[in-house]
Length: 359
Image (cartoon, rainbow, N blue to C red; front, side, top):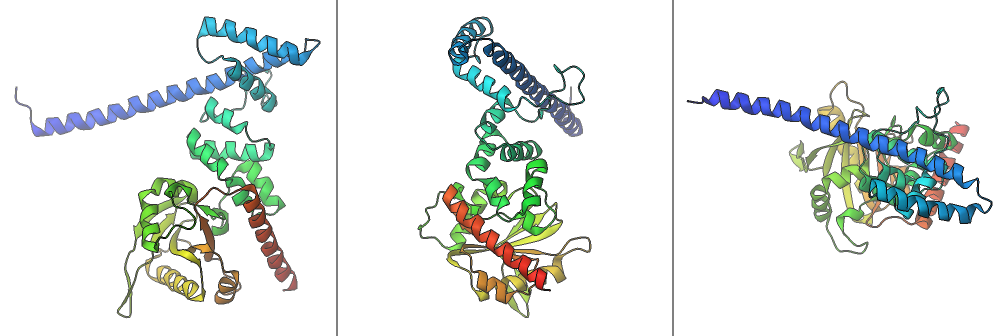
């Protein structure tokens, strides 16, 4: 039997279509199993807490109860019910005891947990003691389909604090209730930008080209750090003006803001007015020559080892909403570093508010 080339192509196409359905179905089954596990653990935790309250010495009775339960459950159902995990399950209920929908008639149903998040996600979320911050990470993990390692990275790099640094009280409430809402370039840019995944030391000798190449070698990690909406477009794309060639380091497109974002890297130094002026030139060129009619104004981002507020302030017009400078660092920030950064952002915000009041 002769098999024609077209038949082979048709079979390959058919296989790809069927394989996609199988993968999707398996993914949905796994998600459903994970979701049911989370709900089951909530109920188990509730039963443990309710039973503990019957003992005269609750702490001693609780320890005894969990130990006995662990032995029986492990014997009958296998792994997953160690003493340590049952303690997590108990804590899970205590942390999320109010997750029963207010509209539910039968409180054994309609528990509000996101089906995109697994038990390992919630175990990690419980390590955050502040409810509003924990809610923020839960919302973001679900919306962005973060794996548990990705969620852990965002938490250990203090994503919430870095976004909150430039927020007022209303903005902080929005972060807790809705997660990161991106309406302006400022909403999309965090401070500092943490490049720990590059493996560089703070005093490592490197060129801008080295840093640029390292970022592209770790593009997925860089996109995770930059946040949702950023899509890579080009590196060192040449633009010509009056016979001279210029090459912006990196160009991205922000799918939520519907705007190009030009990134220029300034390695190991603070920016100066020349850096800002060059970025203005890139932004103006893209605004006039590249931007489509339905695109929003170009965003220019200077990534630098140290910000220079004066250079930015006095080089750009007062109503600047397109060009920004953000500090990068190669280590995860400490709480103390973030306090300093937040205080700096707060003082800058006060200055801007005072300027608006005087107008």
